Image (tube, rainbow, N blue to C red; front, side):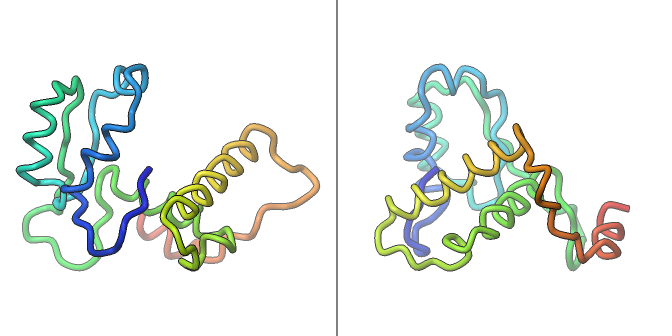
Length: 139
């Protein structure tokens, strides 16, 4: 994970994120799904020079589509951002430094994983209020 300024280009900063992977982590990767911002000459050159064993696959909107379209694999990222944003500390971008912002996202992610391993049976989950909209999207 990497937190950057909003003006940073995703495809340009991707080598920094992918370069953080250990050899063990990158050995498990086969495909990295990404959006169109990752079509970038610098990224392609970095992938060749690093001899990465995985490939980057750009997930595109279907030709001629209009409005909201649920795209293969991309919705997983948006759903994860929503989960992270449920934490009060991550719901607004108040961190002064990028490294503290990264730490808060990591802490929230670890918290979420731990809750899935051992759910809190005493606290009921928050009700899902948008069931009809969700059913129409997954329908």
